[in-house]
Amino acid sequence: MNGENLTVEAEYENLYVENVTAAIGASGNNLSVSDFFARNAELHKKYDEIVKGANLGFEKNITWPALFDGNIALTDSVGIPYSLSALSDRNGLVNEGTLKAYRPLSIMGTFMRGECAPLRLENEEGKSVATITVDLIDGRLMVNQTYNHMPNDLPDDVTQMIEDFVHEVNIEQYESKIAPDAVERIQEQCFESEDMEKAYEKPLSEGSSFTPLPYSGNGVYITALALEEHLPTGVSFDDVVGNNKAYKEIYQLSEIPDDLAQIKKLAKAHDISPMAVARIASAYNSNIRGDELREHVARDVGVYKAIKEVKDEYLSPDAPTKLTSAQLGMEINARLSQHFGIKLDDPENVANSHQTLTSVIDSLKEKEVRDEAARLAHAINSISSTSPSMKKK
Image 1 (cartoon, rainbow, N blue to C red):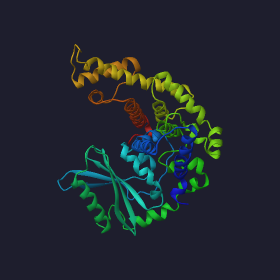
Image 2 (spheres, one colour):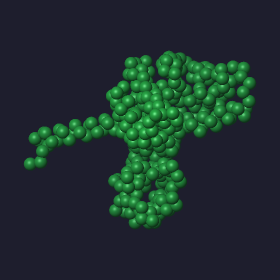
Image 3 (cartoon, rainbow, N blue to C red):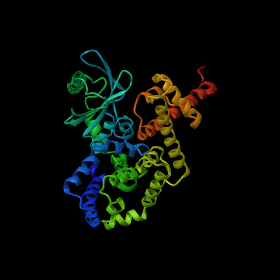
Image 4 (cartoon, rainbow, N blue to C red):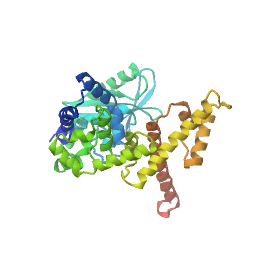
């Protein structure tokens, strides 16, 4: 069973093309064909952002064999150092952290089948510069795609450095890092993947990991709302699902209709979009009808409004006091500390950049992840320093 069989993308395509058209017809909406395709094009423009939101709190991971272990040091033709490492799991792709990093999720089936391998290129500061996919063909490598994460195009020196690396691997000049039989070994191991077996046996519960848009967990609501936002006026997601008997029965037996209603109710109470509520639910993997989600929504919206209020107050042309970016960042943190008990890690950057509710949600989630990692590292160090059995003799 190949990777495509493990996804529901064909069903989504059928749902979108046939059932959306039927729902529009049933509504009596006189939407033109050109308008329909314009809405579809707009939805595709937002695809990367939708995938990012749907994966924020998705916890199921899948793995595949790494092309090599550790890091390989590379230097471009002008002497700038880089580091190359092999990505070997779904979470690794998600954690690349930029919108373009989510595009390789759509070809995870090729990683699982040993047809392609993803690599991470980072600069000397440890920041991901690009995600590179290489085809594995007849025991050799070939660059498939380079997903640039930088604001500008990758320099030609970097692109050439990647091509040179692949060429040198193929002529076995990197055999101390990459075994000559690495491609064959990966392809043999891939066909013995436990994740593939689980997905084959339980596609509904285990197969979601193989899709860019998970069809389990809170990411479902982001997908549903994204579609609904781009439907014609008077046509809802319920109308679309209702045009297929099988979909309708499964949909009505699930908790999705009630959860979407709760999301919209919470959004209305805070005067934000349902998509923003769904994104917060996805980020924190919160129960849609639980107190935790209401608390997270209240906090994230409150933080966003507080940042906006501080900026409006001090950046107004009539502001009595002019602050530098550093001072404005300090004022933002003082306000957040007073009202929410939190401080941003890089308030000056927040002061300098345009903040949307989505960017605030993402930055608060990322801060929580960093804080938790730091807390665990501190706890481990404390145990190591106080436990007699772990002290060096």
